[in-house]
Image (cartoon, rainbow, N blue to C red; front, side, top):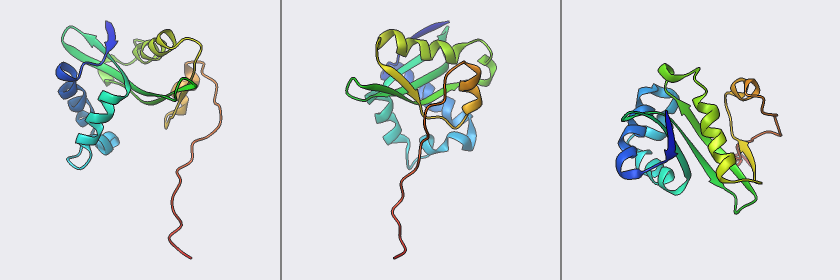
Amino acid sequence: MLIRKYEPGSDEAKVMQMLRDQGDEWKCYWTAEHCAKYRDALRNSITYVACENDEICGYSRSLDDCGFYIYVCDLLVKPAYRGRSLGRALMDCLCQDFPGQTVFVMSDVDEYYRKQGYRKEGSVFEVTVNQGG
């Protein structure tokens, strides 16, 4: 298994297909309405892919907060490759490439990260504009 930096020319279509294969759970990225924006996000983020032969088995996408912190936005491993520590290896790449920076995960699967031994730190809130007076 090889983990490397994302290469838009060869990886984009494969990552987008992997998202479509996940169904509605990831449709906020692959629908016609959002897919161009997400392709830009993949290119402009810290993105790694886990590959076996010519297949992308998983990926992570993160943001660098100007050298203060790294925020993991997305981490996905194909179901057939889960249980092989690929998610952990993708996270380890961030720590190796950005030593001394704290890595935070924006998660909706907290149990996975607890199982990895990561410590829960704070909460994430969605900010909405109050439409009613």
